[in-house]
Length: 389
Image 1: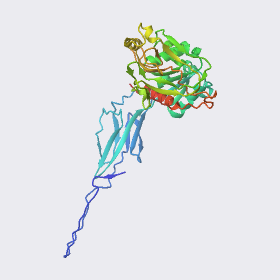
Image 2: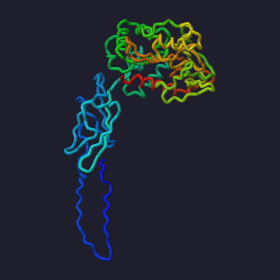
Image 3: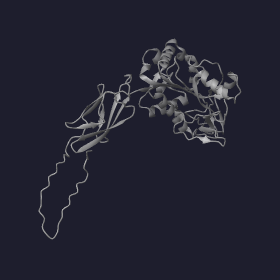
């Protein structure tokens, strides 16, 4: 849409008792000039121009290693048009930029975005998505592929056989609720080498449930803590289970994985988010317990927090709802290290089920009123891990 630099021309004619002389008025305004960007490209990739919304989107192919903060775009403008801000060889497109095109006495404003295409992989032992049989893994996959157009399924066999290049993926998500012992294919030497290479070179990981054990297999976690690993059939329970985001004296609710989450707050300031309501639950925990004692401190000793986070190079993000000290860890961010340059999220809380079972008398339909919290924490985790460093 063209916009005029001069919006209103007010012409006043005076009339009195006497006739006035009529003069012919000819406007010198140039209101027909072209203010449409003809092309906008970055390193040979043409931007998609939407004239209706006045947007231009340039999507760079995955693996280009382009620095969005140092872009050298090329633009083709109509004859006589001027663009502001000026196109230079080192522009920062970390965020969209509004450009104004002026030609003659009209102008247009375009919002231009430059993004890098990337993929998120959903890991599994099945040959393809349709081969997933475990109910929570099925539900997680259905949610993921319904919400991520850039999501792709990756089988461990495909990794072993060289059918997939992990470098094409910004994040790998493994939701494993099948059994506490990791599948043999995950321990395969070729698979393990490729997964380690990916993680060490800056690839990012989201592990849920039993998949958290793979952090020890990969060598990122090495301390041999006491663990609570639940692998029973489950049971019916009338409680609401939650994740506590107040870790002793530390409020972790501002971490990006909790963006948009509405927390409940107790009288003492303790904050928690419900994740599964009354009904049947499988209780498949994969959490660290007696963390403080392992490092030689009492559960309420602040030194335990420092010792645990320092020894493992982690951010301690979540505990079983109600835990108010440093007894256990169920949600963590594993920070990059010199050896493992990728980021990772460890989500081992047992109540974090993508499918509450339709069983028992309390909730026979298996409807989890807090499923949206599970979805949002997962979405936030994937988005956080997808951010390019």
